[in-house]
Amino acid sequence: MSDARLAELADARGIGAEYLDYRGEQREVSLETRTAILGAMGIDVTDADAVESALAGVAAEPAAATTVEHRCHEPEVLARGARLWGLCVQLYALRSPTNWGIGDFNDLARLARSAAGRGADFVGLNPLHALFAADPAHCSPYSSSSRHCLNVLYIAVEAVADLEHCPEARQHIAEPHFQQELQRLRSLELVDYPAVARCKLDVLRLLFERFRRDELQADTSRARVFREFVTTRAATVGRHALFEALDAHMREHRGAGGWLCWPEAYRDPGSEAVARFARQSADEVDFHAWLQWIAETQLAGAARIARKSGMRIGLYGDYAVGSNPGGSEAWSAQDAYCQRASIGAPPDALALKGQDWGLPPPDPAAMRRDGCRGFSVLMRDNMRHFGALRLDHVMALYRLWWVPQGFGAGQGGYVQYPVAELFEALATESRRNGCLVVGEDLGTVPREVGRLMRDAGVYGYTVLYFERDDDEGFRVPTAWRREALASVTTHDLPSLRAWWQGSDVDLRERLGMYPPGQDLGAIRAERQRDRDRLLDAMAAAGVRPRWPVDHFEPAFAGAVHAFLATTASALVAVQAEDLLGMTEPVNVPGTDAEFPNWRRRLVADVDALLDSPEAQPVLDALRRLRPR
Image (cartoon, rainbow, N blue to C red; front, side):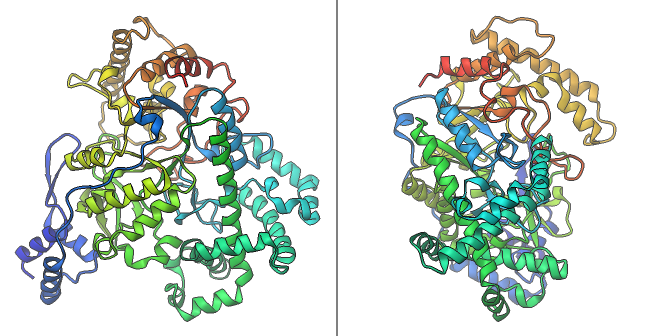
C-alpha cells in the first residue's frame, strides 16, 4: 500500500499530521501512528481496494458545516450582567450523621439549602454517571459504564418511600451488626465503596421486592409511573439495566466483568442469547431499572430544593469526556465507538509522558452518519436536572487525542470531529433544557474552538493558577473573561493550601512522578516566585496590601477568594476543600493504584461545612463582593 495514499486517507479522515505542543512547538505525527488510527477506525490499511473505497466514501460525504446558527441558553440573570458564585463538591466525599459512608442525594439537598441560605447560586458536582454495581471498587466518575444513567450508590436508602412499608428492610437496618458497620463506614477517611455497595444493595433489594410484590403486581399508580419511566427511557435506562443484570451474572458465574470479556453470544445486545437472558432474569433487570428510577427521583428532588431555596442556577453537573470500554454505553452503541484505540492527551507539563485515559474514542464518521443524534441524547440525559453543565475537555467537540492499541500515550495523534454540528446539537439541547453550558477549555485550545464557544454562548473555564500574562505574572481581575466560570483550582489540581505550601510537589516526588534527573529545587523555587507573583497581583488589585505570609491561614484563603471575586468572570466557584483548608488531593492525574483517587472524604460533615471557622473568611469575601 502506497504511503502517499495512506497519508491522503489520513488527511481525509481528519487525522492530523502535526500539532502544537504545550510549549507552542510544532510536533509531527508519524505515518505509522496515523495508519494505526485508520486501522482503529475499521479500515483495512493492508488492502489497497479498502483504502480506495474509504477515500471514495469520504469524497461522497457532504461538506461539513463551519458555523453555528443558534446560541446556548444563558440564564436571564447572567445576561443582565450579574456575577454569581457557588460551591463545588465531590458528592461521594460529603459526610453526614445519616449517610451510609458516602455522600448521597439527601446530603446534596441539605447542602444546596444551606449554601443557598449563604448566598450561593449553584452547587457544582462531580460526574454522577452510572458505574458498575457489580464492581464497586471501580470508582472513577470519569470512567463510567453509562453517561445516560446515574450512580445508584448515591441513593439515600432511608429516604426511599418503600422503606415505610417494608418491615424486613427496617429490621435489617436495625440489626446491631449493621448499625456498627454504618458507624464504621461513616468514620473512615476514605470511601469504602465495596462495603457501601454491600450495605446499600442488600437493603435496596428488600425494598424492590416489596415494590415488585405490592406495587408492580397490583399495578398501582406508582407502578405505572415506574413503567412509564422504563418505557420512555428504554433505549438508555432499559439497556443499562439489562447490562447490569448480565454483568453481575457474568462476574458471579464466569468471573468475567465488562462485556468485552463475556462469551461471544452475549456481546451483541440484540442477540437471541441476550433476549433469552432478559426473559429469564426479568425481575433482576427490573431491579436495576428501579434503582435508576429511585436515583433519578432523588436527584430531581435535590434540584427542586436548590431552586426553591433561592439558587438562580441550582445544580451544576459534570459530563465526562468518555465512558469505560467495557460498560453499558459502549455495549449498547458499539457502532458509535472505536475499540482499538483510546483517548487521552499528548505530553504536557503535568504528564510528561502523555496520558492514556483508557476510554474508547467516539467514531466521527458514525457521528456524521447519524447527524450527531447520539450526542444530542447524551446531552438531554445529562441536562435533565441541572441548571448548568460542565463539559469535561470541551476540545473533544473539535478533536481528540487517539492512542492506537500498542502505542504509548505520547505516540498518538489528533483526530478531527464534526465540530459545528456538535456545537449546534449542544446549543439545541441547552435551550430545550434551560441549561447553561460551561466548557472545560484548559490547556492548549485551538482558535477554532474558542471562536465556536463564543459563537455558541458556551462559557469557558478559568483557573487562577493558569491566568498569567506574558511575563508570567497573574492577570489583573478586570482582564479575565466574562463568559466563564472562575475558580482557584480543580479536582485535578492541588488545593489552595497545598499549592501555597508546596505539598503537591512533595506528593508527586513521593509517588515517583518526576522523571530521573528532574531538578526539584528549581520547581520549588518557581513555586516561590509564583507565590510572590500572586501577592503582587493581589496588592495591585487592592484586595489587601502586600504582606509577608510565612504560613497558610484562613484569612489568606479569604483574601485569595476576594481577588477571585473581583474578576470579570460571571461565575466564581469555591472548592469545598478550600473552605476547610484541606491539602490531600481529590485525584492525582497519571496515578492509579499509587494514590486513592476519588475516595478521599471531607473533614467536616455537610451541616458543619459552611459553618467551620476556616470557611468564614472565604464565604464573607464572596458574599461581600458578589452579593445576591
